[in-house]
Image 1 (tube, rainbow, N blue to C red):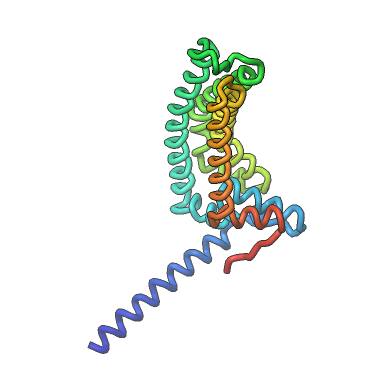
Image 2 (image 1 turned 30 degrees about the vertical axis):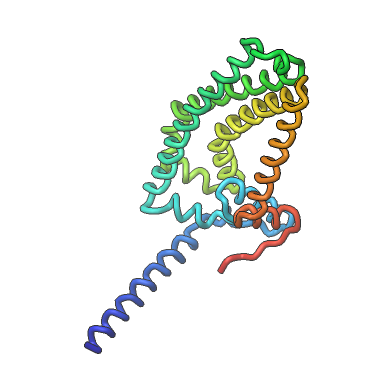
Length: 242
C-alpha cells in the first residue's frame, strides 16, 4: 500500500510538472513583439486594448489559445468567431427590418411622433449602420474568412504588435456596427418618448432610461474584468499575474 500511494503521488507530481512545463513553453514561444511595450503610456494603452479585445491584461492567454496544437488552435478560434458572426447577422437582419419599419410607417398614436427631426435622424443613422454592418459581415465571412484561417496569416501577424491589434479590431468591427445600430435605434425610441405629448409617457421613459443606465454602469464597475479595466484606464493601477 505505501508503494502504491508513493507511486500515485509521484505520477500526480509528474503530470503537474509536465503541465507547468507546457504552460511555460507556450509563454516562452509567444512572439516578443506581442509583449507589453516598455514605455508607461504605450504600456497602459496596450493593457487597455488587451482588455477590450481579449478581456485580459496581456496577450498570453490569447496566444495559448490560438497556438494550441500547432495551427489547430488558430483555426478553431476563427471557426468559433464565424459561428458568432452568423448569429450576429441574423439579429442584424431583424434590427434592420425594425428600423426600416419605423422609417417607412407613420406613428400609430399622435402622442408619439418618431418622424420628428431628431428621432428620424437617429433612425436614419441606425439604418445606415445596420446596412454597413450586414455588408461587412458578408464581406468578412465570404472573402476574408478563408484567409483569416490560414496559418500563414498568424505568421504574418507575429511580426508586429500593431498588426495583431488591427486583426482583432477587424474581427470586432461587425459587432461594433451592430451595437452602433442598436444604440441609434434606442436613442430614437428614448427621444421619441421624452418628446411625447403625454406627461405619463415622458415620466416613464425617463425613469426607465435612468434605471437601465444605472444598472449597466454598476455591472461594468463591479464585474472583475471591467473593474480591472477601469483601474488601468483611469488610474494606471495594474498588478501582473505570476
